[in-house]
Length: 396
Image 1: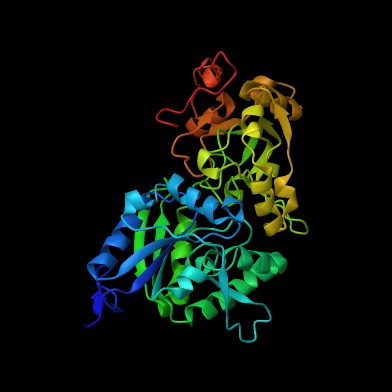
Image 2: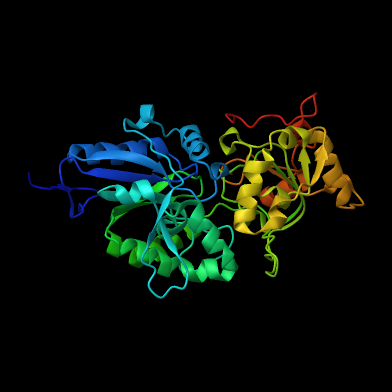
């Protein structure tokens, strides 16, 4: 039987797949908008070509660095055998690839390596640890996604500069195996909705990804003001950001030996909850100054610690002060600012660092943004009678 070609995108891709060929679809742990729709479309396209696709979790140490934990993360993101129509196969086993003169091992998920081909799907965005020509995208997915926990340990062992500088040459080694059929790059807008989906052949990925990263950078959501006394973040989680809360948004890095960003200037940061999709992984907890007991009670320390230790950024796993309620956490954070007039505090509240279409701001911030006198009673509605936050409209 003759191979069939894949027509993905406006121009189509010259991808040949033999009928009956097994194809691994690599899906990560991030909460991409329309993820289920995107993955299902890829699976249906491959099935239409006569292939037999299956999904693999493409994650490093997420999910407690276990196959079951990573499969559960995918299911929480809406990616399951039922929603996509193809099986999920999870394993932490890897095979060793030819690393050439890199000086460190290169690994690939055993199930992906045994397949006839691989399709990688990832969002192109700024990395929460470093900045460079390649950050979070298809190149990273080739390395830390397909390489599983073994590759994550190896890359982080090289330190932050090693991670930044070794990402591209390691990804090239993976692409040169010929296993990757194509990559599907997703760029989202400032509202974290799908702005662009582009299918790239393996040889085009290194060439095209930097331009897509520039587009993602231009669309990065930002806080409404630079100077903030208290930033209230309703929830954090691995489905929100690899660092729980996006370091690019909050202006905190917490990597020993590297300077902190100059902006935004946030004096106190409060985080009140952890997403269920994180499965207890509260990595990035150390970014906060105060958290709630509700969040603290959801932490699975073995799961979180595995991710923190793998990254080597131990400061991000430290537990901040724990308050009984969100209102108490806010009170502590406000007091720590040492303001002479607390009524003039510059306060911003967001649902999380991924969804910032709507924000709550205090009177002083509102005046700056609108140039008009606000309703002085409006911000008093931030908390309910039980001391917890008033839910965002339509928020979960």
